[in-house]
Amino acid sequence: MSKMWAGRTDGATDKLADDFNSSIRFDSRMFKEDITGSIAHAQMLAHKGIMTEDEADKITDGLSLILDDMLNGRLLPDPDCEDIHMFVEKILTERIGEAGKKLHTARSRNDQVALDIRMWTKSSCDIIKEKIINLISAITEKAEEYKGAIMPGYTHLQRAQPVTFGHYLMAYAMMLLRDKARIVDCKAKADVSPIGCCALAGTTYDTDRFFEAEKLDFKDVCRNSLDGVSDRDFLIDLLSALSILMMHLSRLSEEIILWSSWEFGFIELSDSFTTGSSIMPQKKNPDMAELVRGKTGRVYGDLVTLLTVMKGLPLAYNKDMQEDKEPVFDAVDTVISCLDIYSGMIKTLTAKTENMKKAAQKGFINATDLADYLVSKGLPFRSAYKISGQIVSYCINHNKTLEELGLEKYNEFSELIDGNVYKAVDLYNCVLKRKSFGGTSVESVEAQIGYVKEAIK
Image (cartoon, rainbow, N blue to C red; front, side, top):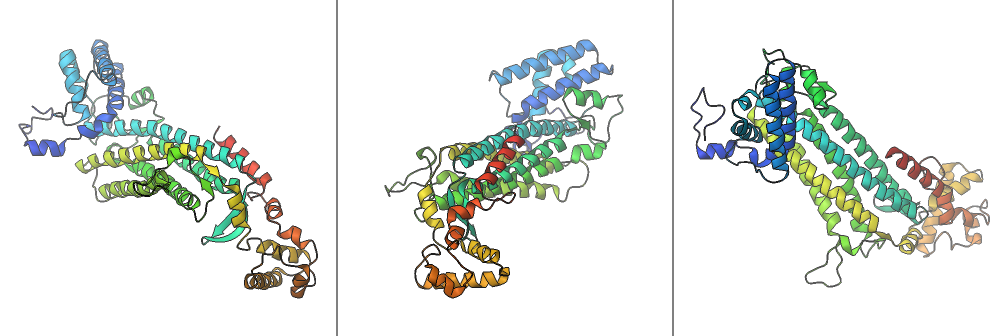
């Protein structure tokens, strides 16, 4: 097949080189963006008198039919074409004749591909944002359901202080709110049109880049043509944001895997989001959570791939940059599937509240409350801390809990302790008392839920 860039050379390349150079097998997913961008380009050329209105109408009609044919499966990308840009231009020229050859006036594939990937990134950010909102909604609904369910909170994976399951879940809702904000920012950084930068130096034609950008719903245009065709920062920003998002999902996956084990027994995952064993009939495996945890490394790899591609490139466009799309496509596809799985998994999980409460009753997670009680009696916190530690040590050695220890024994450690100590170390009271802003009390969790619901409206 004769190449559209034949001229300086005869355009005859080895079949191996053609296959190696080709990107149509993956960039064809941007056909809508490519055709939409070309329609706007033709309209701009007519607007500036660079082509006639009749020519622009022919091109617009031809491209619209190609788009319709591709959307409906009547036209498939030709693998013999180098990329989606060449394929669309080839089909257009075959259908409408000489006018199709004028479409590429005042642009290069360098700014054309930069335009396509920016348009694709913007729409992908919208999809990801909605998926994040769906997951946040699922989490807040579950947090509302279990806002009073007491469980142990951990530091160093050691039982630390009592919290509620609702409070625990809302921590992840807050992480995902930050992820949403990062995705919104990624879209804003992609919302700059590079079309008209041409190969690297702009063009001698009297074009109107702002007209074209407005047609394509871009808020601004690239201010330097060299930067316009060589910038992939917006993709690196996106992959970075997606990596952080996957890190959050991976942390939640780790918790779900632990919580659903027999050792913890805090939650029950729906059969719809678990699998069994081929040999052990008792097994109910949290495979979806494990896969999300595993796919996190895949998205990290996509980020490192693009950072490595870009790290040593001189200005302006280099063919290395063709390697930007596959990792970005892969990361976006992976994140979307993980968000969908998580929304369903969270909506259908059940908390085993009695198991959570029993776990909270062990491990002396109310020891800080005992110390705070002694502070209320006038002791400095460090002194109260030491006495509380001694009481905990005694209870461990004598297989008792703070709630079970008799008042006489308490008084051996401090005469300031009276019968109100049992109210102070009651787990439910421990949770209720933590009314500080952002704390684990039911009242505080309700405030957090209200804040998040407002933030995702």
